[in-house]
Amino acid sequence: MVSSTQGQLNDLPAYQPRTFVPKDADLSDVKVVTGLYEQLYLRAIKSSQELEQFVFDRSELDAAVNQKGSVLYIYMTCQTDDPKRANDYKQFIETVVPAIKPLDDRLNHKFLKALEVHGLDTKRYQVYIRDLKCNVELFVDDNVPLQTKIDLLSQEYQTISGAMTVIFEGKERTLPEMSKYLLEPDRSLREQAWRATAQRRLQDCQKLEEIFDKMLELRNTVAKNAGFSNFRDYQFKSYHRFDYTPDDCKKYHRVMERHMVPLLQEISQLRRKQMKLTDLRPWDTAVDPLSLPALKPFGTVEELILKSVSVFRQTDEELGRQFEIMKNEGLLDLASRKGKAPGGYQSTLSEARKPFIFMNAVGLERDVRTLLHEGGHAFHALACAHDPLVEYRHAPMEFSEVASMAMELLAGEYMDVFYSPQDTRRSKREHLEDILEVLVWVANVDAFQHWIYENPKHTPDQRKDMWIELHKRFGGDVVNWQGLEGIREYLWHRQLHIFEVPFYYIEYGIAQLGALQLWRQAKENPKQALANYRRGLALGGSRPLPELYKAAGIEFDFTERTILPLVELVKKEWESLV
Image: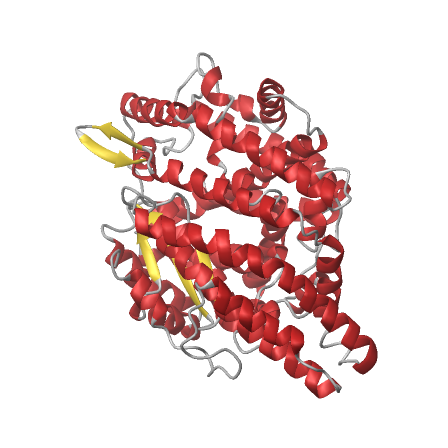
């Protein structure tokens, strides 16, 4: 799989034959790509029909180029220590991506000018027009080389993270592999593994600090060039966040602090008592509190895939069939290995209109949840693949994450494929605890990012102090960090979103609330909940965010009115599983 991934992805047929982009066009060649964008720019538009064809041809070109970049990114992250893969991706983001950006801006202006004369279906193109107008307002030519530098720094972060390994119990192990030791009943072994991993991260601590400081300076300059007082406000507009504000995010932070942190503290105190400990230490938070061995849902990646097919089929026959097709077409790279970038993601191959799932499975319960999560993203991509506009085949992130998080809950009802009845209960209980922890962790990470970009002149020491302050505010002191302060100060380095996609994290909190609403529906009427889920997914990004939520039968709201009943539901369900 490792050696053939790129070939397999490049050989995927297009969803439909190209009508504008030549079949043999080399889309890694900047001259070829810019020539195609120039052709579109020079095209005469004399009617509404010609304007719509312009939109379709532009979508085809964007999809083809986007897919080229996605394949190169996938290939690079699958093996970050391969110089050729790294150089191929680097060349693309240094040449093709920056060359397209000013041409995109010219095409946006051309479209909006033609729209004034010829017009298009107002409802159909409402979101498309709104987003293009926003992009026109944001575009600054001077920002193109700065954004390229940020992309290259992001690649450097990936390379450093992917190279992190430790020698443990006589073998070289990746950091994802090390996480399985934190589930071992032997407390001494857990501590050794935790410390080994933490010390390895600290070895590259200063490199990552330097990368982030460079990113910070570049991002602040990008925002200033675009006329914004801070990068936070620029990024909100860049993400097309039309339906909520930074103040709404801060309200979410306060609700989590007021209602969720005390619940998590209660759960942690029960854990401490069950483990008969004076204090919880960082290596005590993931293991089963009754000293049961770690859940072992699968032995090999092949077993993970086969069992996941069964889970998805029980959830919905069509979803199971779609996942099996992904397996057969080489659209999965799931095993952890040296040189592989950290984390997991689903990437949509925009021209084939097929999803690709990347993750680092090592045989843990968490791996199953990750695959269900990324599977939800994949089903989303397939549900809206019919739309001719590439922009509408990508929903806002606040709804994209509903697709993934709801799938964790809906498909999570069938975890007995992996486990005995007793272990199935454990799995469900641990998942609910994870949901509560994620809701709070989202608030922690998001609040930290707000502070970072609201205070662009801060020093690294001030950043460390603020991280500690926020970590305490959001319940970090349920664990005793005595003697580990130097490690705690840099916990945020593990959160790749802060480096690579700033402010892309609150979506997880907002979407988790949507997912919980769908789960609540499923408890009353599973078929209706799944129908609502699929109806929302099929819209892609073609409607405004609140309408996507409404189509799924849920509310776009993250105030106490919505949050408190959901917290009570999770608490009640969790108590039934303890």
